[in-house]
Length: 159
Image 1 (cartoon, rainbow, N blue to C red):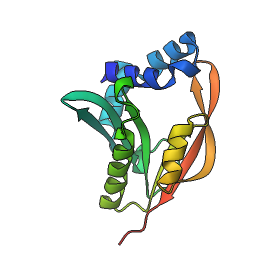
Image 2: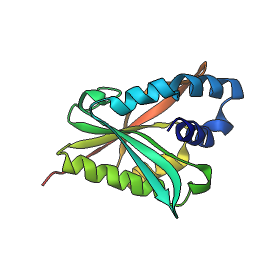
Image 3: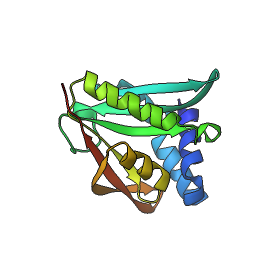
């Protein structure tokens, strides 16, 4: 899990961060102890995706008090969808997002939300296409670089 988390985050954001900031972030956020705590957190769920028998990446969902922010008390947060570089651009992330929405409906959540880096145009386009709307922003720190993530939310009709 540590290696996968580090590899997929780096594959997604290494071109936009200095090596020093990337290393600080990886060491602080994707270390064994922190990831074990995340795995044990009630309301946090990890899903691993395989393609052609190979581990392609993972998704982390949060509900209730496990959500990283108070965006929607009865919502589901998609905290991470990260794929290895060789598996990016194949529609796997979109499929994971569809699965997250299905889980939200199964768990009777009335909204699904996530944060996305302000410069990640591909992801923002996917979310907009799937009915998500920008509702705000928050700071995301990589090393000593203070970046902006936009918050996107989709209201779900339960029925």
